[in-house]
Image (tube, rainbow, N blue to C red; front, side, top):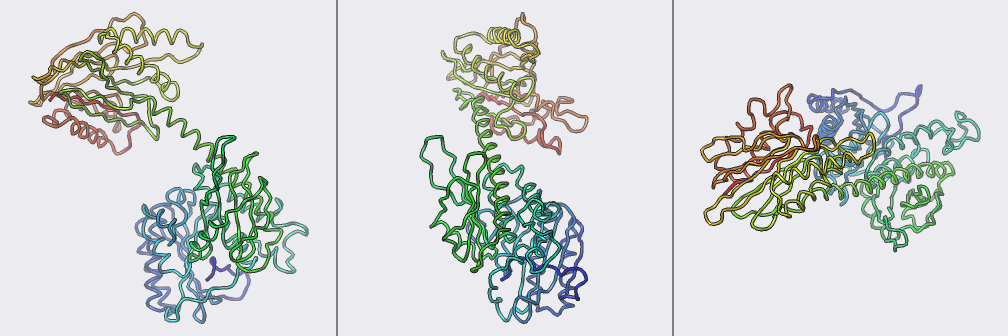
Length: 601
């Protein structure tokens, strides 16, 4: 079976086997146009009905994938490779889109019949899984400007699958680089003395530039390993594997390397190769030179340590089928390629470290749990903007002792690390003040002075720490149900009280933002939260949700939405308000979103 699309004949050569090409629009019309094109072409070539049906099905799936994930125009090519597939030759079909980076990030680059591919294929269409079942062989080629998925079908299915082809020649393997002439006897297009791996060779530079572009910006080391194997096969070798070293602390016992990705030019060989390689993982010194590896399952192999700085990150293994040794050109290019893979792995590992630390610190800004309040049901919705674990909004519900429970919903003015620092200071202060027995108004007074002191002691030019806060205290009535509620709002969206009859009113009045003026006397308001009453507290990510020039709370939009929640549980109220806020605009929220619901039972 061939390892890739046969090289196209050079310009000026005699007419070759039949070839047909078309360009399809990058929209919903493309799949049906592709099916018509394939059926028309294969009918003109008198292809077997089963070949036509299989090719049409596979092309339809691949074109659909390209349109959905890349969104560009799609090039479709069909041709007959008479050199393979026995007397009838092979049908070669290529589907090319023009946005490789987006395609790759949308889904993993390889899905095969092996276990790795089956695990990765769960969230995509069926196209690449069908390839593993119907095609004689298939593969993917990434370049800077396009991505091609190709497959081969025997044109005479009654004759059965074609006999496996012999080892790939060096010229065939490197044909995709466009440098076969360098290796061909008597070729004079390359300057004397220039090796393929030398930086002066333009085709080698093109390959290395493509590798750098595709590998850069990847934030997961397994993704880097997957891309590396795909770039190497079939351009440098018949098969490729990447082991990754465990990231351990200095002085600790380092675990055995992990076999991250295996790729073979022939689909049926992936799993046997994986099993063979797992039995003999490479053990090499920390050097970036490619050295012969004596345990190649089918022929010669090269192993190259992946080293960035002075740290060994893994091992790249390339192998050939057959007995011919790899040339110095391939060795040199492999070493250059391995250095780029190592740099990408180092960047991905640094990103993972920083992301893990950031996630741990952000999770520390939020309470570990929400305290249960006797006779009061509660629900929280917390959605920080983007991929953050915690944003400028924060919440808390905690027991303050002596039959009291306190609740908090706040929003730090600003964003990023400064907002996180303020959140990290304020939430413990509130817990301490609440548990010390201070009343609601006193807590806000003291917190306001603390923030003012922090601003006064800050370095010149540092941003002041302002905070909007809703803080309250609940004292359950006991057997009669309900609770006495005392709360205050400092520069925060006002809390709303929903009665069982569907009426809604503000439960507090507006007051000054915390941290702006030092000497402010905050006042609290007290009322009974009777059985069936619901208190809704939100941040401005709810009230200021935008749709064009309109805000969600324009015309008392939040109160209107809450009025329709009479009789619902706290969880149901929270879920309905959240859905209403999200549905207010077709675009995702551009601010943190938090809400707290307290319902007396």
